[in-house]
Length: 380
Image 1 (cartoon, rainbow, N blue to C red):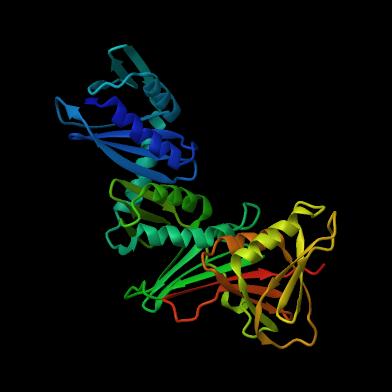
Image 2 (image 1 turned 30 degrees about the vertical axis):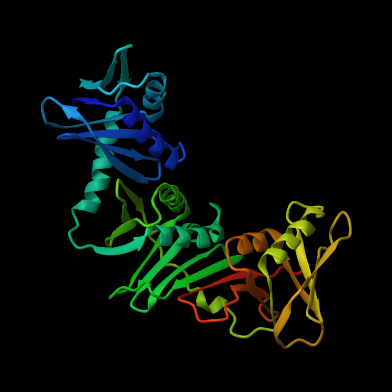
């Protein structure tokens, strides 16, 4: 391995990859392939990002070396810009030859075999299905679902987002048993049905990649019936493992009937909950509602100082004898749910029989997509 490369361009590529994977990378794998240097970065969960950079070589060859990422970045950061920085592999050392001196970086030989096995597992299977999405759409899907995924203490399937592509539209679901998001885009259709679940951590890395991409660029997703999925971007690829468990049936949690449903301004509602939460004695406050004459009173009983907010709303369905709603909600869940939406007005549906609240955007006309956020009620 013997090539010349712009020190600035190489540093830029490495820093972007390291930032995307949130500094949890274990190694960089450099693979020289003709006049291209393929750079692969991975973490302990086998989330893999690849990119490439053009280099100058005297002789074309195929060689690989794995090195520690922080050491390489730290050295390049201290060098002044050099258009032809010489990098040469000598035995198990990757040497950087600069105008200012030479700097050896030790290799991690055992990592080359493990990452090659991982990549070959995906590449050797010929039959694969492809999905094409605009990066803007994929980023929107993640923003609307990731907040509802569980933490590590629950079983793995609850730590991911469920993807279902079908001839009738595409649905994306996340739940931690306390809250559930079901987001459907009707005009994303395939001729066949595909279902898979991707871990939260992998999707957070994917979200970081999408934040760097042009929103009009297309993401090519390659899916095979193994536990790996691949996302192809213009200058990068991302591979991650799927969660090898069946996603729980979620539709039965969504109530068909409601006791009270009302429309209100999302921002006013969100800010009111935030204000009331400030006065809570605990880190997580529990919000109660009192609905009467199209006015919603929001308050928290267990507060340092007695405070409340009132919002005008429009009751669109009522099957309830009194204005008092015997339901309480975790303020953190309500804030997360309302913050994930962009619409000015929302519909808030309450079902006392199974103690749930459902938040939906309020549409006057039929839309090409739908979303509902279900939150379990907590009795105070």
